[in-house]
Figure 1 (cartoon, rainbow, N blue to C red):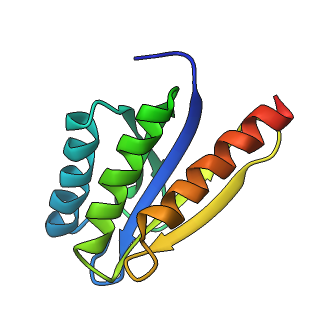
Figure 2 (cartoon, rainbow, N blue to C red):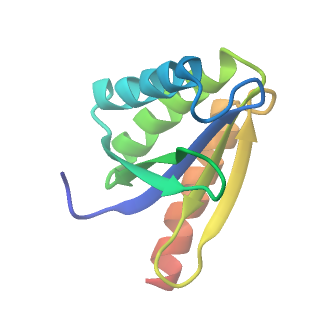
Figure 3 (spheres, rainbow, N blue to C red):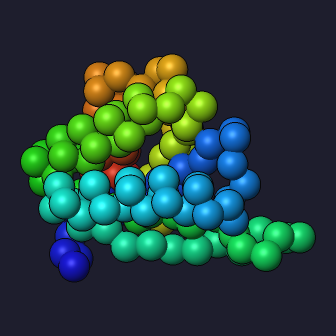
Length: 128
């Protein structure tokens, strides 16, 4: 795993599924595999949720190059566009100012997602 680059946490959801639903786990697994196949540096992080057995699984990406950003954008856009009810919350935390954006299947153009990633990169470089 690369140590440089910006860290971007993706929390994916779908209004039709609970986080512990096996169908949802398959969909989240497909997103994870697609990012791995696109050679995006990624690891999983589980966040517990009060009152639930499981929790929210975040995909944490390390985006060190414009190629990695482009690959992540393409995968996320493709995954979101398959189901309009899907949503991805993107959090960029440079240690000082976490910034969160939400994109859903209805607003998942590659331009929108790329703007989010570029804003994340700009925020990290401005504050770091």
